[in-house]
Length: 274
Image 1 (cartoon, one colour):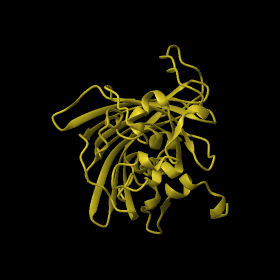
Image 2 (image 1 turned 180 degrees about the horizontal axis):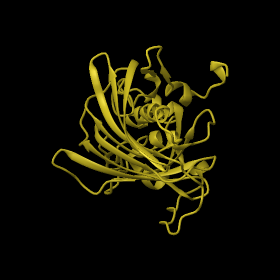
Image 3 (image 1 turned 90 degrees about the vertical axis):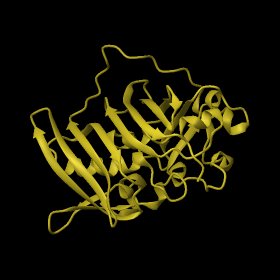
């Protein structure tokens, strides 16, 4: 397929094998969250592709990443150490490194996902139609002071639910909760690798309370529950506590049919100014 016909996400997360058998990627600077810092979910999608190249199974179903530091855009190497594998799942440890050394280590479990409905699931939250939501890309004032509009928001079309977007218009909430619809701006449909990016694509939950500082991710776990249907995903993030220099964030992601397709939990440093 000509490179121009490949969706932007697939180009940006491509992993190739060298003649010596190693795995390499070219980290795309266009998936930053401001100030040139690459999005943690985007990095997980790159790692997920590397794990699948070494796995007998087609989908990432559980990933747990420890972020050692922010890697630079450009060349990166990925080292996959296979773990136990069976007929239904396989485990591996993946390290992503740039010229300065390891940047994140990730344990990845792969398996085969389906589309069958759940025995029981929490209902999808009430949200207005996507047409009534606020486009992050079209509102440059949503970027933190002194920071350009993140490249991520130009590649992931994010439409904030007005009920959790008061902070963007001078009406912060007393609750750290955000909700938005998401899809790729070029129309690429979601899949399990895309869900790894979506699970870290909202602004920090502290934004809802009016604190627009940067909150670097320290640890991120994502569970992919099912193959998502085409169309918009609805994403909700909330924190249970912000204290002592730390904040937790729990994500839930529903596809266009209302099926819960992914969950995540991350630990981050409390927001700080650049």
